[in-house]
Length: 381
Image (cartoon, rainbow, N blue to C red):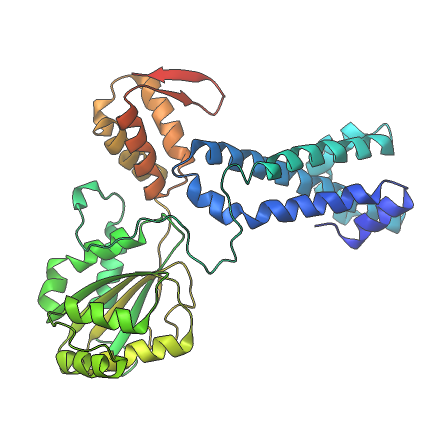
């Protein structure tokens, strides 16, 4: 946003200050819906295009403000300062545009505003909503089952080994129960990784009981306790939370268990303490595996090191995309088609959910017009 130097510069040069205020407002409005757009681009090409445009517009606005700040500081110092030399090349193109006077600076600002206002106005039509960072997205397809087809998973061998090492270790800071967290952005494959390790043969041998629970936004301690009871083979006999927790405590007593809590958003300390109390009756080495976007989730528990799940490499992302779009990457003989496919896969930015969703859309439509980075179009048969 605009620094003190920028505001002073606009005032001192009699450039319309309201334009600067409008620019800041538009940039804030755009930033509030970016989280929602990042997820919805996976299933909407319109949002995908909008996101690319808004990022480009915001970058240009940032460069504009930085350039003005640079010019303002130069005026304040009234002399060349070598520390600014490194900035010169970055803003050279901007100053070339504005070299004929302040009028062109104002015109450039108006153009930036028009672009941003146009894009911000489209957020309603695209169904983009403001996110605070805590609430889950909607709609969302939760990982309600622990089953997974591992033949469709790419590039997660090292992540699987890392999680297995954490789960099979008895180190929980001297306590019987430890929490392993898989933390990563939406669509990066946290649920899939949890499914893989949940079904691993070593895990099957290590734990007496296993339970898989998709939590999402509904973190009701009573409901979750009932689901956990069902998962470990007991029918919930009560409605009272107290009696349910006693029943769960007795079921888990001295048993080594693995509980997966998938897609957790809740950070409320009191709720976590209540949920975890009966789980402490398990045997040494019992583990809870939590998948979440937020580091603070489950931080109330003794926790082994968190595993941060990163995006897929470009090659693995391409392989996943090709599998869902064409059957597999080896079935594409045409070099130009493969080049276009790789360009699309690159746009997925390493997110498995994006690669899978786009691949499935292409396969389902049979014939689709694909746009490359050069804005050319090709009909894919």
